[in-house]
Image (cartoon, helix red, strand yellow):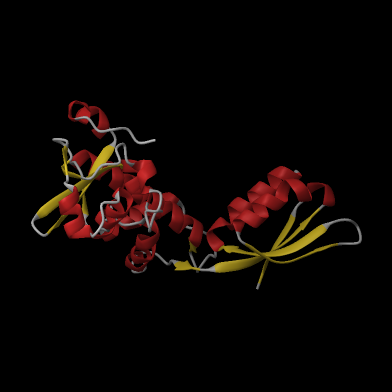
Length: 241
């Protein structure tokens, strides 16, 4: 549950937090949010926003603990519901970051972008994923700027387009045929299902499981490695044209 905001506890509340701000009709409105929540880029609709506010309060100045009046909130947002107003602020306002917060969030977002590219993209010439270090080096060479506030999922395709003149890269999926001994099915099925879409599956007369799965090309090696580890090398895999 959110805690009541007390002005004398501002420094404690702001540790690991950011301020989101919106200005309209001559009024300022601010909310305090967990920095990690803003950084993860997963909450497009911000439906769980109250769970990530240390105080369910709308301020005119969060650092001074000055609360917005219900009259001002109703005038601008046509409501005094904190959740509705907080979502509106996130969608239409901006987040105030310190230099250190911006650097940390930018670094984290860069790691997310690189990890996604390694997983989802590949070198079309070799049909293998680019290693993270190669992606990071190419991004530096291209002078790519990562927006700390934009979701990583949105930036991935933008980054790949900028990388194309430097390295061969494309988003592709491949179909992988897999055969497992029946005894290995249970311990491997979760990895297979989690890697992509199972297109077909059947049981052989010898008790083996055979399936065809569509996966991002970049995770082929990772999936095959996991299967070999769990089956002690008995898993059979084949890329299908």
